[in-house]
Length: 220
Image (cartoon, rainbow, N blue to C red; front, side):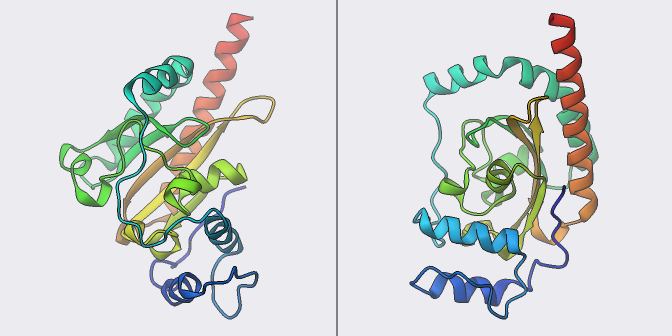
């Protein structure tokens, strides 16, 4: 089941301000039009002591750990790359990035325009960067990892203010046992948010899962 953002880029701003300004853990959505899955994520972020106003670059893997991660996920990366390239061709030149993470939220592979990959807006999208909720607050990658569902997170739905400029659409890649193997994500400027983006990501994730299933049958 997918979870979509509908016209939420600006409508959640007041709710975010009030939530992050309140010292005690909120347990009700009060009068704000915050989606339940976003509200629940905000609560998790507060309980994890994520700083909503921290503007530092995300924690990243050291080179040795990065290489281990890439080796362990080699099959997934090989299968996913052609589908990521196809997604990138659709969004090329638009400032969007296409990313694949492992089960901890670390980016394993990424596609994007050269200027996008060096743009301050997307400065935390790089190989080895961590996008778990505990590190990056509410975001499509981290929240999809926890819920196991596809989701789009836009603008001030992100728990960390530094990500309010973004719209992120992510889908989990799941094996036949229901285990999440990684997350496929497309992220870009918040004003470019569109439901079709999440649909494309979900379709690509389904295709990757189908190919993983075929490869496993061949090996067996």
